[in-house]
Image (cartoon, rainbow, N blue to C red):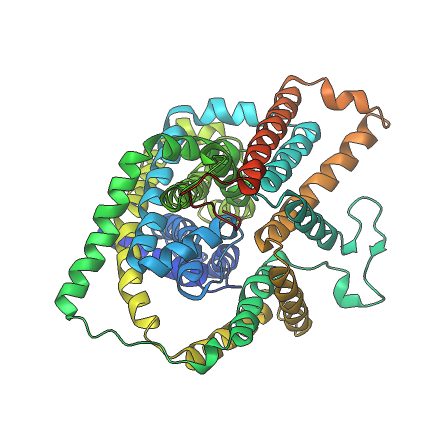
Length: 515
């Protein structure tokens, strides 16, 4: 154990990070799948190799979800879908800049999560234990409301998209009563619609249909003839310098998002998805003005991406707080991590901090190295590689993407039925996109729908349908008040936005789309 960061373990950390990055960047090959595939291998490895590999997979897979959004417009994870539109528009200006904003704030967010993990793991884990079904219900409501008001000027369409997502999440067996819902007699529908399959269809297939509809597939990509040295210098400047200046300018937003991500991460069952949605939605609302110039819209989009990337990686470290201190997984990733702990002969819980303090410190160090050293280097390599991807003719690239989406959808459950679901949702997503409905909110509804339903049913069963109990617990009351504040503040900002659309000031560029 004392050699956790020996050269062998450092190599395991690097290889684990590469493995996680590959799975995170390819839609359908999730971080959870990457860790699941690693578990059998962990049986034959020394614990000093297992733990750094697990940390590398966990940190890299979440960050790499943005690579798909930037290069092929398909988010690799549900967390990346929270700000996929903004980061995709940034990538059109400079792929290296978009990759830098996706990576460097992620490293900062992860480090904030590690610092909080080091300082207050026990205290925060005890606080997380106070969360009952009532608090989780209000947390889901808070996320849904924030998602609605994140759609500037499209509140009704945003709410409908969320409703569609929640409705899709109800397909399958009822978690409380156990009867089939919307299965249409098909055994394949009893397990429900996997949100990763929906993610691939809604963003991947719909984008292919959109490009075909616009006739882009008939054109060839323009091959850059710039001097390669100058191109490399520009990539390095856009990747390191510009994102660093953005982080200095928006350091308040980055710290807020990191704290929100860590806080959401240590709540069992919440995870990086909800953290990214909350942080990006709150920054959209905070930076919104009645009238915004093009420069202000660009600045808002940069802040939204920065907040989302910092938050989802902070949540990864935050999820380790209840896992290490109490043996309670913060999300599906840490549920697998706990299994790996047991395989390695490590018992999580309070005794871990007293009997294996050296091991705990080495885990912190492995997190720091993965976040501060490995993640930025991998992001830079991805920025270079993405530049070559954009030179591939669209007809070839779209064919490759279609094949990738089919493989990704099939790999989730090894079920061909998921491919048909993906194609159907892709066609549905294309229709929604042409109608101006935000697709990201559909995914948010699918993620939060089960959390909302299950905790509502558990709560009402516990108190025999006494709805007053939803307002009696202090933390639940705080979350409810936060939801009301978002409604009031968001309604006010939307009213000002609508007025600016009806009577725009002379000489002011007012955005017409959702930002």
